[in-house]
Image 1 (cartoon, rainbow, N blue to C red):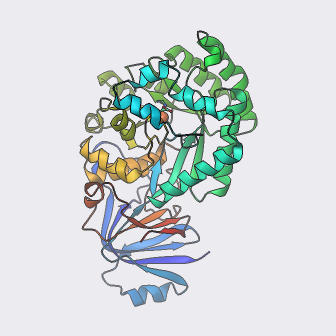
Image 2 (tube, helix red, strand yellow):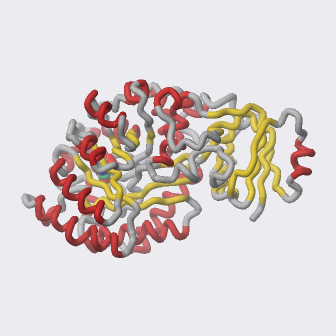
Image 3 (spheres, protein in one colour):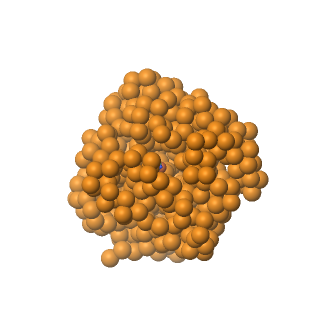
Length: 422
Ligand code: NIG
Ligand code: FE
């Protein structure tokens, strides 16, 4: 495999040889940074980096004779984004509901009328696996162009054993064919399907007795999720489902406290969830529960922005010493964008994270929330070379500041140049 030598890097950001799997509290404001640096990639891995100073481009290139040399003068180099929460396999967009939303209907009201998740699920039965795969592949390419190198994708728009498996098989095929690192999460308990209306317990039984064994039998999921919230699944439902998942080795990553203070965070912590996600309704008790846990809190700014929800208390969480990740929630109903650069901007504009904290929330801590931070999420020797080169810019703060455009020039995944945006 080819070697790549990046030279004259204005700022190499996210440098980390501590071996830590996540950054928490005050550490989040201090990602490692080198000015005027070089980075060497070999056989898909980061093998070396350092300051240019004493070393000229010619001498560096001489030490690595077969390397392709990229000049990053005036540019930042950073780890590719790690997007720990998406639903990017879906059959159709939902811009008609979006109009209802503009006119004032809430997410819950739309859901009650059979819209929302059920609207998407109604289309899942008829779409072919091929179409589902191709549309998701397009979205993966789109997010890769904007700098995402690793992504978690959930099922949850099928809501029958057959269609949930169909979604997960599509995710498996994406894993096999995409240069992105992908983790699959089984989300059978995303909504109660119409066929089980008024009989939620029977649907939970089906998730536990039919779906989980089938998903585990084909080894289709890395994680298990439940939408534990007001109007969706209760703490008791969640408890039962996570307990069943645990027996098959499925670690939870759950939707919690988006619509109400639902007890979701505590039940997630109880089952040693890898992450609890959304968290709009997070109080002191929830922060307390997370402080001693190995569970990553994940905030989804795109959903709060798109649905006009209250904002999760990100600043308070970091100041209390917690780690924090931010992800896109890319889905057709509550966050129709997988642009992690926009998430970085929202991190600072809406949630008052400084750019350095935003960077760690969308790289190393996102990798943690996918179980990938041993190999991804920072510029560390031996880690997989998922690396971005920015367009020329003054410094890291420009990244969230100049919002709305693609500021990534080159995307390198697994040590290979995948994209060059001009
Ligand atoms: O994370 N909150 C639950 N699920 C998704 C929304 C899915 C949809 O509306 O299609 C979310 O926001
Ligand atoms: Fe979600």
